[in-house]
Structure formats: C-alpha cells, structure tokens
Image (tube, rainbow, N blue to C red; front, side, top):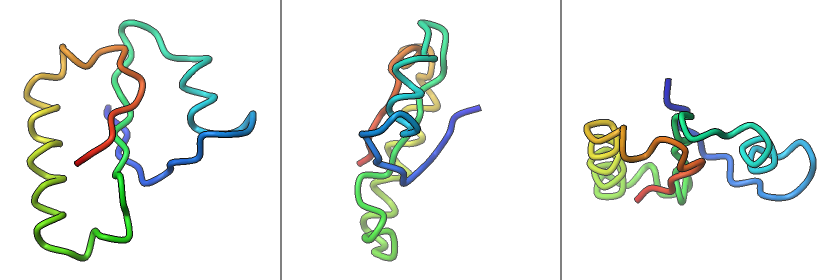
Length: 72
C-alpha cells in the first residue's frame, strides 16, 4: 500500500517525517506527498500529480526504501 498524503510536517517527534526516519527499511514502500495541496483544484496540477503517481506505481520497485516522494 502506498500512502498518498498532503502532510508535509517535517518537525517534531510525532511528525510523519520522524516516523519515516525511524521505521523505513529498504523494502518499505514510499510515502507520496502532494507538494501543494492548495493547487489540487487546478486541472493541470491534478494531471501532473496523476501522471507522476502512475510513473511511480509502474516502476515501484525502484522506489522501495525511498521514504518520501514529492509530486509533482
């Protein structure tokens, strides 16, 4: 399962980034983070996010252990 999120919180012991640092392994699937959730209403931005997400899904073995990937 790939987590798709808009959570960009990078600081604090309960942040998503801290959990990824502590729990990520070489076989972990990446967390995909939308770079700018405020732009999700824009059709062009949506398409860029979808295109990138499909790229990642089609080549997922190359992203194992990557922790977090920002799209687009």
